[in-house]
Image 1 (tube, rainbow, N blue to C red):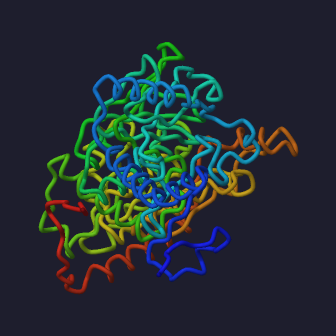
Image 2: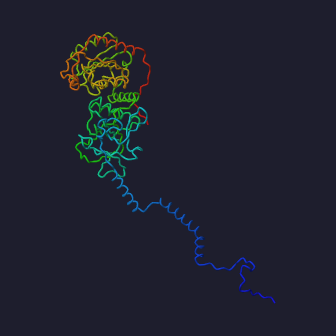
Image 3: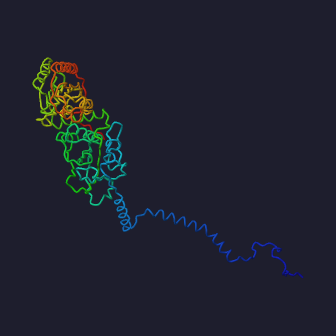
Length: 470
């Protein structure tokens, strides 16, 4: 008889193996196992949740949230706008070096070597920010300030000026036609290089101090060059704390410094053409090779000739010796701008004392000649500025044929005091040397006749004065 009973001491392991062995799992072991089984599921769930959050973070927020966020950001940006002195007094010893003392924290840019150095707002360099000025003090540029601000977060109570603004700071002035031309030149170049975009206004500074006028000659050249009336935004008399922000601004603070000779000559070509168009002048047939036109442009008062009759007589006699030579005498003080342009456009040889009237040489045909005269004392006392019309002739494509310096005249009564001695000599009258003047005039006339005698090569002239580049 078979028995299926098992002894109580017999282990289940000793029995025949079964695919399902009965065993007992402690409670804590069950929870651990459950956690291990669910971990991948939880991990996948967290990843999906993160992806969902990431994707939805770019969805539009409710209007209320957007408004609160924007207002807070704009407020923070507005509070972070920092105004700095327009004139940095720390650079007073070398105001035109480096970034200059005008808006000294900002750097210039240039489109290419030899092009004007300028700053443009807004731009990548400004981080897309607009230029803002609080510049109501006409006497102390260090009390005027500037800042950069985002258009959406302009300073409180600021005024935005629409359109393009030309902003200039000069170490000199805008009334003297030579100094004013130097300040204007880089703007004319920038204008031509940027599709001839015309400014809606000009803002002028001298040492960070606002100026509201230009000399009439300078103003007309600016209008002729840019094709737009000159409107000067003056801050004088306004609340010094009032802030003006500019929709678009070009700032130049070095005058024509850094511009290559070739670039300057191109700008003078444009100014010459546009000034003649502004004055409705056309070239005559006789302007080619048959006539040599000499102009005596005499000053009245300071640096005038002691004996104008004698000087005029010398040049008249020499002119009469040359076939086709015509001579005229004029005074700049009684000529309008367009009369000056017309006179110079009809001049091949300009005879004149040192002075601002010589700036009109830029309206002559290129390769025309200039003869310049000085009172006693200038060579020793005047400094580099006495050569400015030599430089201008070179830049504008003219021929500076030399200078005559009066060796005679009164001696300075102030000994070795150079500043006082220069003031003494600066505006003295000029004598003459008949022999030297005769030889000088004859030589220049001979050279001019040779230069104009061969058939003129046909060079194309842009009568439309279209110097615009996109």
